[in-house]
Image (cartoon, rainbow, N blue to C red):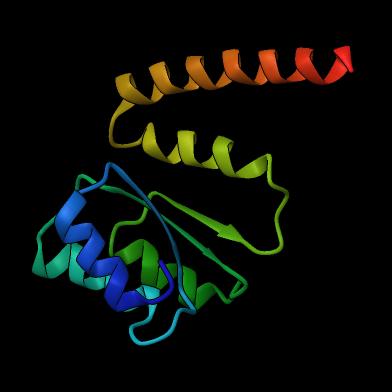
Length: 118
């Protein structure tokens, strides 16, 4: 989504298992979205991974104190995202994360095989 208010509306509608959330988004910061989810919706189960260019210790600790499962500092490599998501998801849903990791590895192997054939 393109802003924090939309992110919160989508969260309310879908109740996703995992959210990757940028801190610096318009209309409502990612930090405020995180705070709404954790405090007002009392949702401690959704794995939330913050993705941001902010690397100040205070910003990270504010998010940790609200119960994030991961923090990715930009810039990052595209292949870091699925690994970080699966690691973070494993903190709240170990069995589902393990199954997702196996599927991801199989897909990655097939994709790599496809690339090497060309």
